[in-house]
Length: 120
Image 1 (cartoon, one colour):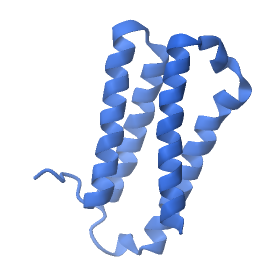
Image 2 (spheres, rainbow, N blue to C red):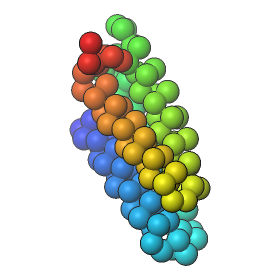
Image 3 (cartoon, rainbow, N blue to C red):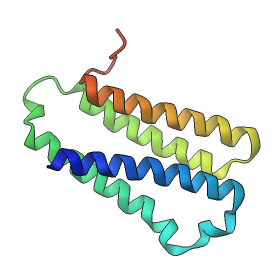
Image 4 (cartoon, one colour):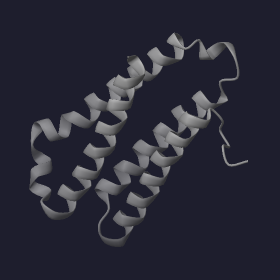
């Protein structure tokens, strides 16, 4: 059950991010609404809490947990790139957007493979 809730928050964070980028590009005035400013922080916090819950529920700290550390580090990179995406304009925004989506893809692949370098 907790895994499904966590996956729901992953999807909501991704969809919310893409939606905010579209707003920043086409209707930046909408980004000033309080709930739009607050929702990414709430979703990211809930995502982190459910992730921590999964770590303890699955007893994943007993074995090799480098992939969990990698996901946590990549989450911070995702947040940083997301901030860059929202603040930049033009081509820089879209390069940061692509890098952010790649980072999200990498986090998801690490989660499924349970390996930091899943491609090796």
